[in-house]
Image 1 (tube, helix red, strand yellow):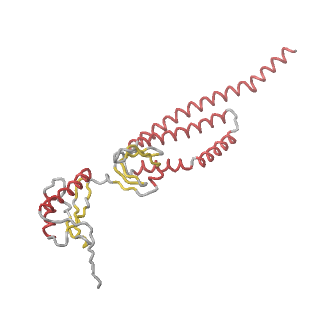
Image 2: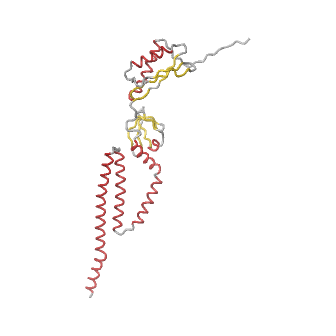
Image 3: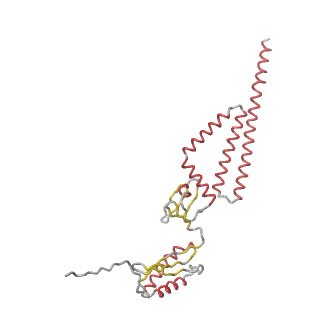
Length: 275
C-alpha cells in the first residue's frame, strides 16, 4: 500500500513538475541560443549595409553594438518568460532604470547625439582645419562623445561634440582653393597706379597664385593716414599661409625699392602763440 502511494506520488511529481520544467528550460535555452544566432545575423547584415553606404566605421560599430544589446535584451526577456518569470515587472523595471540613466546622463546623451550627427553629415573630417566653439585647430579624431583637435602651437584640445554641433563651424580645408585677403596702405603723395602695377607684377610672377579667378587689386579706402589697396589673389588652400607671408614681405621690399611709402598713423600738432 505504502509502496503504491510512493510510486503514485513520484510519478505525479515527475509528470506535474519535473517534465514541464525540463521542457520549459529546454525551450528557454533554445529560444536564447536561436535568438542569439539571429541577433548575430542581423548585426552582421546591418554592418554590411552601412559599410556599403560608406558610413564611418566608428558609427557602424556603435550602431551595431546598440542593435546587438537591444536584441539580446529582447531574447533574454523571451527566454525568462518561457521559464514562467513575470517579465512585465522586469520590463517596467528596465524602463524605469533606462529613464533614470537617461536623466542622469543628459549631457552625455547630447554629446552622443551630436557625435552621431557629425559622423553622418560630415561637416569636417580628420585632418581638416576648422574653427568652432572658439577653437581654431586641426581635427585629429572624431569620437562618439568628443572630438580631439590640435592647435597651431601643438596643444591637444578635447571638445564635447555638443559644443561643436551646436555652434557655427568654419572649415578652412573643405574647399580646394582660398582667397588671400591683404591690405596695403600707401601715402597720399605716392603714385597709386605705380603701386598697383608693382603689386600686379609680384602676383603674376608667383606660380602658386591662380589666374582664375583673377586677382583683385583695387583702392578700398581713403583712410586717415593712407590710401588702402585691397589685394585678393586666389591659391590652393594648402598654400594659403605661405602665399600670405611671402606677399607681405615681397610687396614691402618692392615698395621700398620704388620709393612707395607705407605710412603709419600720425598726428600733426600746430602751435599758435598767443600775445
